[in-house]
Image 1 (tube, rainbow, N blue to C red):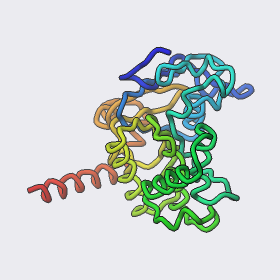
Image 2 (image 1 turned 45 degrees about the horizontal axis):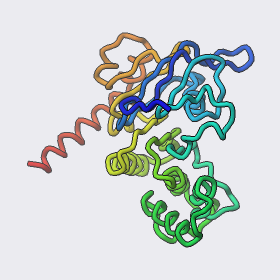
Image 3 (image 1 turned 90 degrees about the horizontal axis):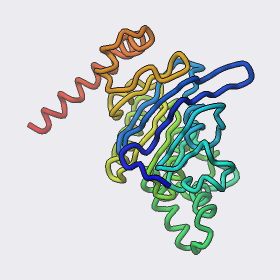
Image 4 (image 1 turned 90 degrees about the vertical axis):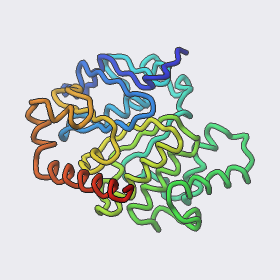
Length: 270
């Protein structure tokens, strides 16, 4: 296995096809270690398909994907992807098992990858991850049906963190949350990324999230990544979708909010 300390995710020439529909063609992307990279694009541009390809759930028609020095595209089955324990995934809506409690959901990856762990230690790890996600201790005993939408996302995040991953994949983590809840989730992700030294691959439509916590943004259009950089770098491009997205009313509002937050932070420091 070849280690890639600075580029933990590398995608080259990716092509994804569903029947006659080509979703990606010639897609290239590099994710840097320790960054939060936001992935945006219009409906149907294949943001989730890209994530699923990177974690081995979608077999591409062409291209190469390397994660943490291992080839994902050369793997023949799940057993060949021996680095799965080094990433965590939060799918849309949390994707929790409805018949398991929150703690039992968090224990699923622990049981899969470390079956030798004793029950007491596994329970304690699950409890710690639930608290790390910002949920109260009594949430461990609740079932998904007893949780609010925001709590389900946090429970899904706790499960994604169960194995102390190096990479964290988030698919629309703030979708469906009110502005206060979304902002709190953004700050949770930022805090975890800094504390745990995570590299975060984040699919989102939330412009506030992009402005507040993302180091770079990758834009999907025309079946590929047409640009990847900081928001100021993207704003300097003349692609119509990029301009409409970042300079539209919601984009301007998010930018203004970021500037206000920055000014307030400077005042507090002073």
